[in-house]
Structure formats: C-alpha cells, structure tokens
Length: 119
Image (cartoon, rainbow, N blue to C red; front, side, top):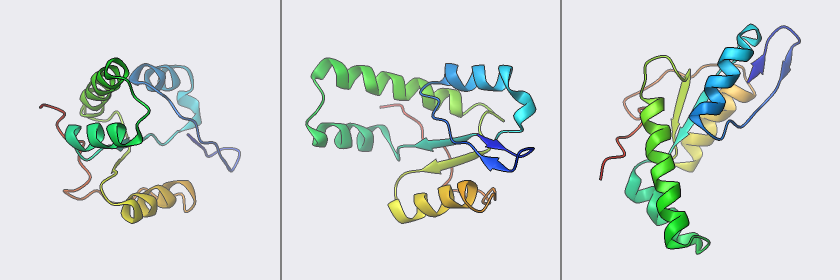
C-alpha cells in the first residue's frame, strides 16, 4: 500500500483476495495503490513451481487452485490499480519500480492483463 498523507511508502503483501478485501474495507483512508503480480499462464506457474522441486503433488495442486482463484478475483473490474504479468523479469521490475519508487501508475498495455487460468 502507498500511504500518501504521511509521505511514506508501505508495502504489504496480501497473500489472498481476502487480504485485499480486508485492507480495502478497513483502511480505505490510506488511498492505497493495489498491485497484482500475475503469472503469465497456469502452465508457466506450474513449470516454475515444479522446477523449484519444493512442492509435493498435493501442495502443487493447492497452490495452482489458489492461483486460479486469485486470478479470477483480479479479473474483477477495479480490484487492482496495476497488474504486472511476470513474463519478463526486467519489464515486471520496471513496472513495480514505477509504483513503489517513482509513485507512478504505469499505463496498462495489452500485456498487462490478468491471464486466464483455465487449463
């Protein structure tokens, strides 16, 4: 979240759509900027998680199901101010830096759309 009144930046990770809903409901006075970092696709996310070697089949399936739900929530109009699709590390970093460091909301392009998580 970005706190404007105090001139400070406060980053918070809301690990779920529920977390974002709670922050919006309880702290609307903060004038926060909500950023969603999305995987490029379900297959890419699965490949990344599998490649780490840290997931069991059950935990992998749970994380993928959670990701689908998070992306479905993010597709709702007005939920997030900025969407960053993590398909290119340099570009993703540049967009996050614009928000976090330069206090800008970078213009969205066709690449900045939450991908469908349908298989």
